[in-house]
Amino acid sequence: MVLEQLESPMCSYTLALLLEPIELYAHHVHDLLILKFQNKSNINILRKLVQILLELNNENIKKFKDIHEDIFESPIETDLHVVQDKESLLSKLIIQLLEGHRNEDITYSVSAAKMIAKKLFETSEDKTSGIDSGIFIKIFTHYAFPQLSAVFDIYEDRYGRSIQAAIQHQCKSQIEVECFQDIVEYTRSPAGYHVKILRQALDQNPVDYITLIRIFIGHEGKDLSEIKLEYSKVFDETLDQTIQDRIDILEIKRLFLTIITIGDDPIQNDSSETRSDERDR
Image (tube, rainbow, N blue to C red; front, side, top):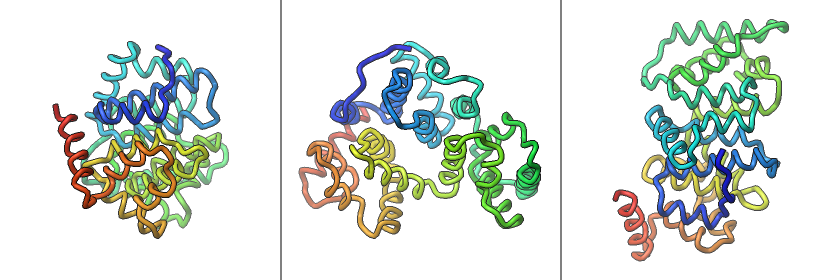
């Protein structure tokens, strides 16, 4: 693993202006692995990694791995094994996410969803065993999101309990449960999931600027409008109002407000257009 000085919020802000989102993700992941290696953070690094990788499609997973290896001269899988037991459930989950083999069909099979939901229920009722961990992980990392959503809905409708019951039976620790629950929440509502992550980052003391930068930059021009709308529904205030009130670093506040508001200020609009043009070069 190539160890470098961790990037400050202002450094990440500067990188955000210069890099493609996937390249920015690679820098953030590398920072997380350094924190884990040096044991300098009380946050759970592996859950952060799941959050970053979860939203990448197969093409972007490949691009992410290529960029990481090119910049840091080591495959991401190798760096992961330096800081985490490769036999742990979470390591296996992350490695499978890094394989980039998720089915990306928008259709799903009801019969397959019923079969998997039944198996999950039966194993959660059996107090002595569960589904093989490799199979369980592949369900969450290889199945298309519409197929996963059907599994979760059928499980809860047919058996009258939350899918979290099946997850808890399969996992040995709370952090494992939380990582698989993240996949459930993202599957059901990507916008709602990112609203939760945004609010958690804003509620931290100090504010988790790295996560905020990653989400705003990564979703600019994609589904940020959906995230903004969902945020307003959940918290009864607009996202830009929250940013205005809670962000102390002026330059970062300006960046965020430029991204998330349409605005009447032509200077802001010009700034946004310039930054987008720079990325296209």
